[in-house]
Length: 586
Image 1 (cartoon, rainbow, N blue to C red):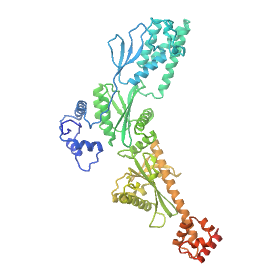
Image 2: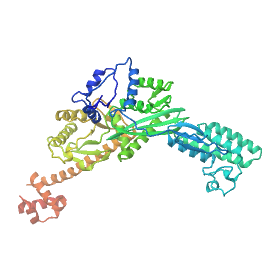
Image 3: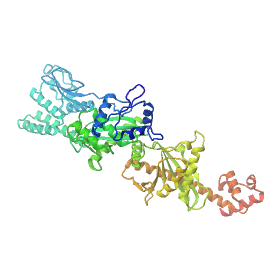
């Protein structure tokens, strides 16, 4: 697709091109803002026919690389390659470099992650106690006192002249083997060497080897916490916020976590298609494609993408959605990191960001709900019917928008009719209130306290009023704890989705607390009114007038006749009757 200046702004493929292209220009199409903006810029388009879907995918990828279209998902990768440099000296040093220089040194690489290489070089220096100073050996032997690193055990002290050229070269070889991911072989060889040194009574050298072995083993123990089950694989997660989404990759090599990437992007409601395009873009920037790609959800045209990646890597590549075990744990770790990165970007907590994204996935919402409204009915055996409405904004209670409703028009217990009435009154305010009213805020999700019955009662009301908002129920177990989310056709189990479960539980508990607090307040007033209306000559209006004037039954009892007479409609005789009745009933 091209704009007015004939610049390519989007490249796409489709099995049925006509259907795909016309879908962009169809009226009332449910496009996101990015697509709407793109369509407004399109002036012309070209098309190319291919013999297969695979050829179309290869061509699409090639054209996107060539044109870098504005409206395709483009991952900004500002990482250059890094190298490990082993200097060409009598006592060589190991360092990290951004590019190869013509200096006679040996270079390992290239590596895509500068951060991982920098950390690895530091680890190697620490474990093998290699010098990181600017001294040149053997030129600077004994010319100055050893530095602080030697005295605190972080450097072997080559400058003292006590480390032979052969021992140092052996240590550097061990460090290089470690950097290349072969720590098990390194440990085995060092253990053999340590025993040899001990037999020859070279106890200082044996002690140095022992310390390196222990340091390597401690490092391996730490890495087991984030070790992959397989030698080489990449793990991906996609988390949506209320405004942007984050795509995170965690890469494993030799069963060690070696790198991670985070990309902040515009929200795409079609997650399977987004994953497909993101994986395609991610590997178009890298030559190193692992045999296993672990993802946290469905990938559109996954078999086609597998074929393309396998062709690019010259080996079988599989895309896997784990359901249990170690691989699922790695996906959850990746998702937590993704949510953390997005939360920092949006200025929210990781708990809220992760919970809203999980809830959206669970309910099939196009994006995490920014505004959630929840309703609960409360009454005592059908009397004093009330409802509470609570609002959560970005996963937090938004108390400014809380509302209370006294259910009107019928007696007795009918939770379904009560819920339908409350929803109708709420959205009547949405249409009729002036700007600035919190009733004018349209929710992204409605959660009713109840199951399929409540949904069936409310859904026709929303349809009749033209309110298109996802509607679900919150189902409790026998202990009045959140158990599942109800849909119009059944239930969604939620306990296994931990952060979403915690959010829904907090919403259900908050709306119940709010509704029952209002019911108790109304019930107390109702009880007081009943006491007053049982007095001869006192009806609803006079009872309400007394309560409005004095505020409580206690203050009416403490009042004198003259004070009661000040209330409209009360004679001296009626005031005496009120005080006498209240005194006898106290």
